[in-house]
Image (cartoon, rainbow, N blue to C red; front, side, top):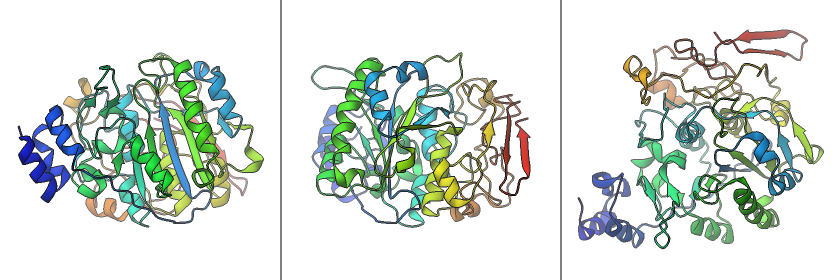
Length: 418
């Protein structure tokens, strides 16, 4: 294990990623304190104009069934200020694969909350944003210092759960953690308010409350009250809200035996005036957010489940894309397809990392990321990533779900996951 002196020396002259390799999962308090004294956050800014919004803020709460969240008075009152999404679905259970999917377009078979790591040849939204130098950042409440890679960090006074790695999308990816600059873009709430004050918020941010405020260790009443206090003040800040689309959603529902639909809504200055106070019944998943970010800023797809995902309805209208209508009666999305991060039976026959699409059309309309094409060239995609619903015919995950759409020329298209 690194000593405090050696850690400080490394952090002073080498990359943050290299400094953490000896004790990534459970660094000592001494190591954490040393890093707190030396590691500075990185807050890049950009101003790339988008088709429907100029800034996107992703805020996730935890493990709550749709009806329970919908009945919370604080959340419902916030939803009235924007657009309620009545058909937004998580990807799977438990928590970690959903967070992982939001950054990389796949769960990679993850069916657990373990200390998982995705190799550097798998691209993320960070690579997507780099195409146009769009600034991104994460704000993880009570993260002890920028780029912290430990499994958790408890409240040092009460011992309560605060920060947990499983709720941090970017930290799962070697392409982020092995890059010292990218790593320092994973920051805490102190930096969030500092970036807000100095008007250097990124154009994309992911915000994770601690385990008390996100309902994980409390309940939806507590989390709803926290969300009301957190967002109400921000919505009065012109810099924060102008041309900003803010998504409040959940990682997953709480009851595994039912469909994994989750309560979600948009607020912020970028919500179209004609949609405020209304609801959108379009079928969305966490992958729809990646696809919509691509369509909004003219960015190529990751070539994974974001490729076929529906776009935000008013963004689709701007691009000319026609979203799919999905029959959700027998859709559950409560299991994960096989893959290298499976802890269950499937990892024995699916150890390889899934191959993304390298050519073809995606819903965002801007092709596939060049680095994805180069890395995976001449290989056949593992899944049918053009489907609006993630599914796997080998395990039977989400098989038999029908979807259809009517194109602008009147032609009808339909499909079934099989």
